[in-house]
Image (cartoon, rainbow, N blue to C red; front, top):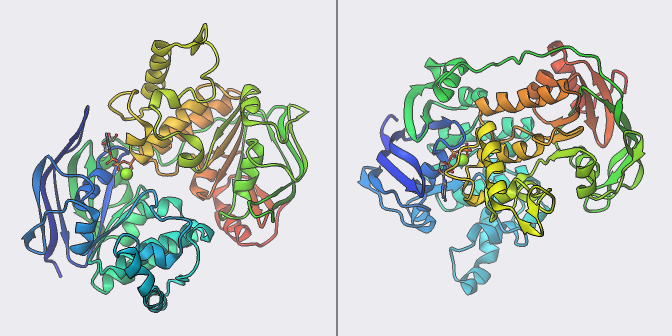
Length: 506
Ligand SMILES: Nc1ncnc2c1ncn2[C@@H]1O[C@H](COP(=O)(O)OP(=O)(O)OP(=O)(O)O)[C@@H](O)[C@H]1O
Ligand SMILES: [Mg+2]
């Protein structure tokens, strides 16, 4: 069992202005689950992209199954039975599962002739692995969790012996995560070798045999999971102690800032998603919304952000009706929005980081003067935000697309929080960010609350909700089914309510 399947030796990779990998050594044994852990920008995705043939290393060698490995494209990697599920999915939404699975593998005419066989084999594999994937379903109709199963199945279909998963759980609900981790364990028991990237220490502890910690492009340690613990891993990763508990001040909540009255919102297919809910958020208060994703939280957030029409009911900001107001006007009224899907709503990937930092304000002074963009002001503004929020990048002129996933998220958080919003709508703010940055972002949210902001925090992470909320509302099937104080003895209660059990005062 303990034969190295893969060894990457002295891997160096430089981009203009950044050395992403500074001589990395990584050995992965056959049949193990090997976690890769490290701060945002530490070089995890770049290292794996090299292995998958997306980038060429500047220096270093790779040995795979005892032979030197040279991959110059993902096609090469697949031929060598190396598969990868990316941090941001790469499926084509307008094609079926089966079409996506063989995409790029055959000529179109071959593909057409083989479609029935392909579908049959997918159906067979799906039932073998208990994956519940319909080969004829359109990707666009599938949930995130289902799409991920398709990505994994695609790799198994092409005979992967080594499977790389880049933050697969960042987008999953706790239930889906549990399911995925079990499935990975099963695959490893059948002999598959897995490299698993995550920011969640409990997942590392639960699923992996060994873990390699990267910091700033270098390996800090490779350890057996059975010989470590979350605290030690956190320290190795960040280079200091990380607060697992945040100190918080007690303050009286002030006036009602946001009042939601009998709000109903439809989903994108026109079906009711939010079913007539009412609640308030006061100044100097953080109200958490817990729930399994897909219970109306997304639609609630979109409606509050002016991005989805309200079906009925009211949204009042300081007593003034603001439902169906465009986002730009809401922004002028002091509403900040950290969206759950940064790549679709938070950033414009081809634009520079500096441009992304003024998306709401590009046509206002001081960023525009006499009709011209004030470039120096814009650059300096971005530099100061990047510094304050510790966004790791080579310069604010680079395209947002070149930042690591977590650093894109930190940039959005920086842009939204710096304006000292009056009302903050925060949806999954720590998705994909490392534990050090999570601590920082949550501290920032707490600080804004202490300064008087009203905050609505939507999260599927109970840990996070209990750490900062003043009270927690539980959403289930479009309704609020309970309200609890952030007392950790109630975590289990909340879990049950999230699954549909009614209790407490709604
Ligand atoms: N195509 C690119 N062009 C320029 N710089 C890049 C490019 N890809 C990555 N980088 C830089 O390389 C460094 C490592 O990035 P990488 O994506 O590997 O980080 P990561 O460890 O995966 O972080 P995260 O946890 O945030 O996903 C970062 O500083 C990033 O900005
Ligand atoms: Mg990454």
